[in-house]
Image (cartoon, rainbow, N blue to C red):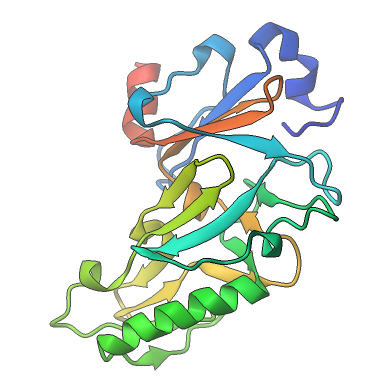
Length: 227
């Protein structure tokens, strides 16, 4: 489904207006659909955000956006946009459905980690170690999780904002009574993974060079459309 001339969407572009869509969810018992052209239905039309796709020098056929900043709750990190999208190298924020957890460039990840550490220290939470994950905390039984964890918002050039709800940013292990940040540091490209894409309708338009997105109850939508 990439921008390669040999990809499916490129070959059928004239039939579907160059448009395809998906809405991901974590429930493995419910089947989702890849939709094309007029078969695409956006539920929350009044809340649709649209961002322009940019060229990525190292992954020219991938879909990339011009990310300019990240927010944690109401805290805007004010990260210089060149950290995400170096104009001289033509790199951008990749959208990928093969990567589960978003990969954030290490320089930016350190800022995110510091901001979250400062927040969790105020709640007197104790750090814990969980394999694979970099930042994990034990929960205090008397403290409600929704008071602690915050959403993460990706801000794109042109004004579009993709907000990932707290449950899409943090993984909770109720048996071990802990939670971990579901974002990983990387020295490679910055990538939006599937966990942070859950319950969001994405519509790609390769002819216009845009991607639109809106929060949606994907399970309910697919059931209604399929019935």
